[in-house]
Image 1 (spheres, rainbow over the protein chains, first blue to last red):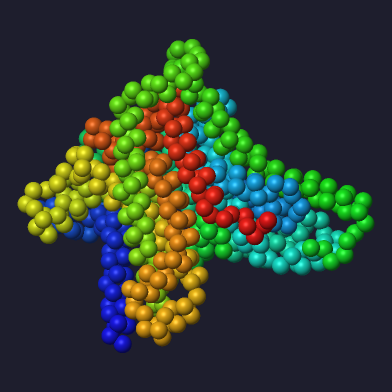
Image 2: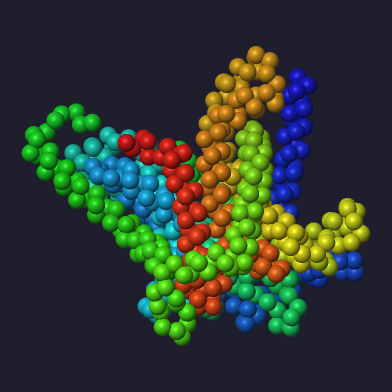
Length: 276
Length: 303
């Protein structure tokens, strides 16, 4: 079994490389945020553990970090939640009801999901400006929902298709309306799928940058990616320690989600892309 | 299929009610996609036919913007860069993604943890990781030059973000880091769908590791590989965040992507010209997604 042993070594070496590749930038970010001198790799500095950058992020009022984080959490959670409310009935109708042109609708939604965001932004900018909505939550939440809907629809359809049709036929015979069936039969059974979808929509909105930078102007609505991307020092010197501390803090919600729910996220991604 | 055929008139009425009901169920979705995707896209298409600059009255100029595009060296530079970026980064991501998927598919006591670690680059916002990469590539004290000098590739530090070639490499590596996990996850699903019996049979027949990979894994993974390839190509075409934060399109416009180029004109309130750039990118993505819906056999189980 020499080949099996060789394979074992290959897997060990490959996994080592994979971990180094994926984790190095993350660890570098955390290390920099915890170093007294953020440029700890330069000859003179060296690494000395310190929390001063976190203290700076927490106490600096002009940095507005917690505003950004709060905006991101609210906008992402709201987008994910409304996306479910809209995608679930649509997925139900497509998988369960007599509906002309439903395959066409699916193709259409898929094509829509591939439009480059840059081709939407100038129009959306002027639309939101005309409504006086620039720098508000709704300016971000509404387009985020529209952009998350295609993936959400595909994920939910793939889960709904697995639920046996007898289940809702029985409920129909019992006199339930379609809404009631969706709410009381389908949604509870498809809960894992709903959860996957919520996670992906949340992470998508948390990541989004182009709309956020175009449609917001200050800390009252700017999200974390924009806040951190635009964060420059006052005196020309970039405050790397504070930037990395803020980056680490804003990555924590995402790290927690991936550590706890990696299976749900992976399922959602694969269902959305290739259909289970 | 219904077990019994109801009376014809009743069936007709019944399906009409269902028709109407299903329409109500998809209406909110259609409204959202219409208001926030379709109308903006058509608005951009229309805008690209106008001279639409701040403080000047908007006026129809037909295809003038596109004529200027053809003569604009800045546009061609970003066009070439975007294509080059796609052709270099996407194959790299596919190969690495396949490697990671094969590794993640192996049974291991820490498989869940490994998968979570691989997902991290995907989950952290690109704008944030781009800041980390900016520090990695820092000339004087970044991780890249520290490694470069300590591994003695050279005694001269590399000006990663200050030279065209360095910035190109820097952007490709950062984007590969960010997007390889996605490829790996998609391919992992394809791998786990390959029946293990095939491998066992091949081993009984004496096929080695390499042979099993070429004869079983690659052919059966082909549809999934195509899906991942097209998804990634479309996504790489519209790259924005990473380039915006890491290189700002510089130095000297050498890493200007089409999305950044269009954005630049929107910032200058030149909506007509910026829209024309966006339309070019839109058409490129549309062509690819048409290829995608043709290749992937979608909606089959619904037919």
